[in-house]
Length: 439
Image 1 (cartoon, rainbow, N blue to C red):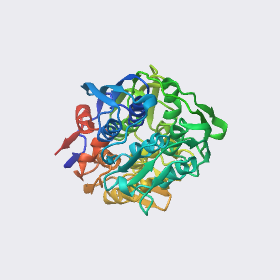
Image 2: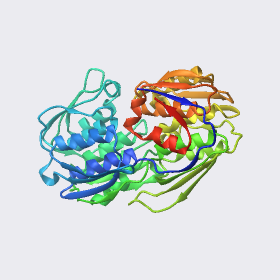
Image 3: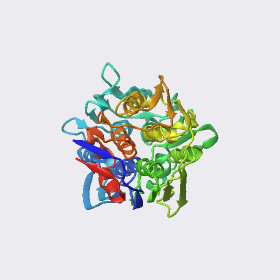
Image 4: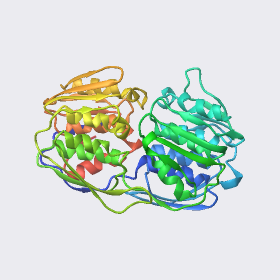
């Protein structure tokens, strides 16, 4: 699908509720499937990635029923496999484009004596899996990958031994996989990261009856196994990564004022707000109701004119890694150089996002440089018309759309359907706020 975005004829104004958080939705479905009972989940993101997780746990023996479909998300009832464990699926499990599905499932399956093979689409099949499979093998699971260390991955779990895993790169997916395997291991399983990553697993597991130890000073967390997963009901707040694209658009389009309601304000996810504030952007987050252990509230963004370049350090990146593409678009309108350090992880996302951002913004007329693990954007730049490809990457498609709202000519984006991975209603929500998007 091709989508053309034209410069906004006027300010973007209004209120929007972005879809349910993708990371929280994945975990809610997985933990409910592991539980010994029936769970009601509300606000679950209805996207291709979450549907992949729903399909996977269904193949493994959980019963997943969609009770209601609404713009804010799905209401699900999930009956878990509990102490009986997952069943051996009749075929390979296709994880689609979802790295979270594949990596967290490996942790779930590591402690059960079932043989499962995970596959994915061409993009997911290029993403590294050894960072997950190596610690699981250390714990006693039998795992094989392709020669390149990618999908397909076959795993046969069983009795596990606890481990102490020191990660070289902060990764919520790897951390979560090890902790989930630790639920079936004998003893204490400890994960130590070089920097804090998303902590949704640590926040959510206690709601399902699993204690999680944490020592923030060392970026350390642990579980004591074996432990059973209890049933729980959960409500999923809006996704801050999706909100970032709406917020960025409001900061760039003259006169705009937009509020995103009921969005997760977990501090491991809101690094982009700190960066935008340092750049001079008018952004405020107001806490509201909590969603279980997840803080939530509203984010308001107002156009404020002048922005300035900033340094984004490697320590900040885990809290904003998915927002780098749209932050780079904002940086193209800031005075001076914005430098992102420690962003090599972007090269192994749904696309090589680092190179894709450089190429895309360069085609739009911006001055961009990148290395193996850094990106620089020099501004301000008046962006021009361009024809771009999403490369099948939802974050790129939406970032290029934000650029189109302030470009001097139409920006055409090939592969627009990729937005269905995380924010299927993105075009509709932008249009409701006053943007101009056409097929």
